[in-house]
Image (cartoon, rainbow, N blue to C red; front, side, top):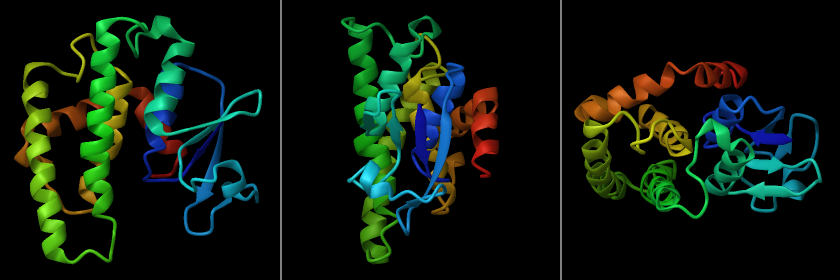
Length: 200
């Protein structure tokens, strides 16, 4: 498999999961500004959507969209328990968290990268985002991970996008449970290895 990634991007989440599962893969860096890979390929020919992550499978198929990639990877090694089995209610709970992180946290923080938005618009985005942080905090005050069963692909995703708060000067210490979560996930060997490999 090939994982197309860019540093500081959401592609860090599947990168972490690949290492958690000890799956063989090749990292291919993408320049987001030129849409060229480090190997000289046109990334738009690989993923016409133009953004990472993209996972190229052994048969040549390319899978995009973080939550889909994460679930695909987790199901390759179900014994690792990074996702509950398909067909269970707990799997639906996981999908609920993946959707919440994708739309509310990833989406909210993603808007802040838009330099065309004036400060008052960004302030409104942050106000909504911070309400979502409270919801996350309520769960993470009760348990160490989003899922009661332990570390899952949803945690890798949340950790990845919450790292962007540093870019925008958002102090997670305002939400102690989120800060403890970030510190906890940051200590995982898979996370340390993924960050080192991406030179972040």
